[in-house]
Image (cartoon, rainbow, N blue to C red):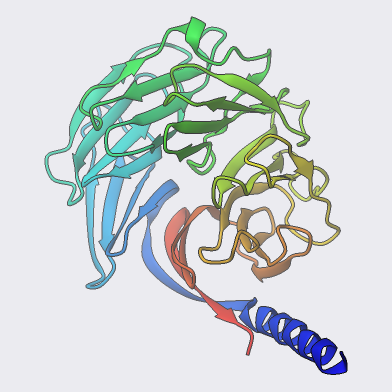
Length: 347
């Protein structure tokens, strides 16, 4: 019996030590792009990174050769792109403001052309994503009373806005924030969309965005700049929604909620030390859904226990969005730069 107990304790201690040794302690930084541009939308593959931002600019970085290619999208005036998606060899860039313009092109950014245009004094698109090679979705603020929902079922060749009667009917003061192009999470035919403002909720569709149901979440809300700004799912069960109060960026109360049952229930994560307002949150790949990285007020933060405790990795608060390349590397973009972050783990 003693030998069995000793063996069990040895395994527990070993696993605990291994877990501690695998935790991130710091980061190493490498600036990969410097330019006059504001970037809130990134996409990353094994060999390439794409971005879209202000001044009608979009570009790609070839990660192996470090070659950079930038294009100015053909808009009648300088516009800002806050939504970007990569899908099956094609890149899609969606602008904010009137008119909304969606451009598509190859992953080399050749032959960019407009595939959707919408004119309305209230038009403002916030995010775009693909569920699979054929199905894609973009969401935007209401031009009347419902969330604007664009869908494609042919890989992005054609897009249509669904009727108001089928779209999420929003409360007064409820919309979406174009903070980091992480308002949409896709899992096969299931789509999650977050809203914020005076009312902040999750909207779920199980038919690629054609019909929706509402889920309440215990995140900060009630003000014009409060609520959910970013969401991420590690798998079909573990997900997070983050944000806070953009007008009080150091406040830490009710900025993060977590689900462990696929979004059926959500609980508020409370912490004393950690990020304030969160612009973007992402799971670290290969972390079993435990490790998180955020960017926003106060810089970059890391948690190894689903947000219960945090350490600051970087104090630069000019980043708006981030995307992981692998479990040890992510790229962050924001004001005038894209930076490669390499995670340094404990030994």
